Amino acid sequence: MGSTLLSSCGSARRSEPLKGAVNISDPRVERGRFVYMANCNHCHPGGEAGLGPALNDKPLPEFLLKTQIRTGLGAMPSFSEAEISDGDVRAVIGYLKQIRAADAKPM
Ligand code: HEC
Image 1: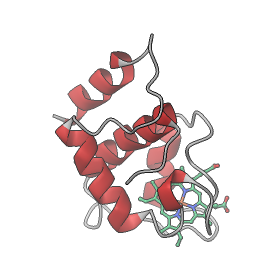
Image 2: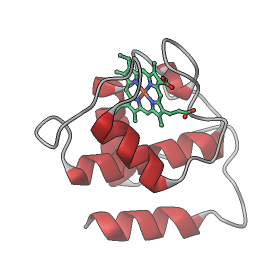
Image 3: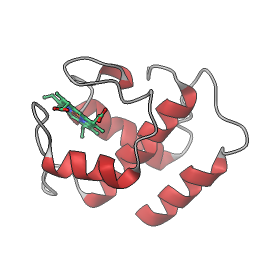
Image 4: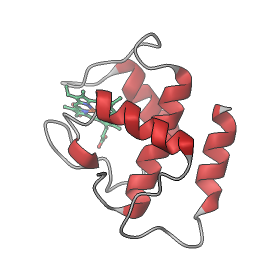
């Protein structure tokens, strides 16, 4: 389930990046948005810098995102699998790709 999410997210918009709005028509991206709002948004508001740095302005590789979520760094807490499942980590990463592509704040 999760691996198909990453491949479909990664390739769907390659030639034509989204502008202006976050595409949440994919239910797994919607799930990622939900997980993001619950766990990440208070420090990375809308993907922009808050207590943590902006996430929507640089192409962070997936393994790095996953490591960051699982192990934390500095002031960022770690999230165990009990807190965010592997599937939800993939959903969040898919969502982050969308906000980077759209360069827009989530609603
Ligand atoms: C308590 C606040 C807090 C929460 C909650 C939080 N972060 Fe962070 N995040 C930070 C801080 C602070 C840093 C910078 C850490 C450092 O470099 O010392 C950071 C860094 C990052 C980075 C690396 C950015 C870069 O430029 O290298 C990523 C990716 C990231 N966070 C993703 C997430 C995701 C995804 C979530 C939700 C699952 C999340 N964060 C939740 C505070 C937070």
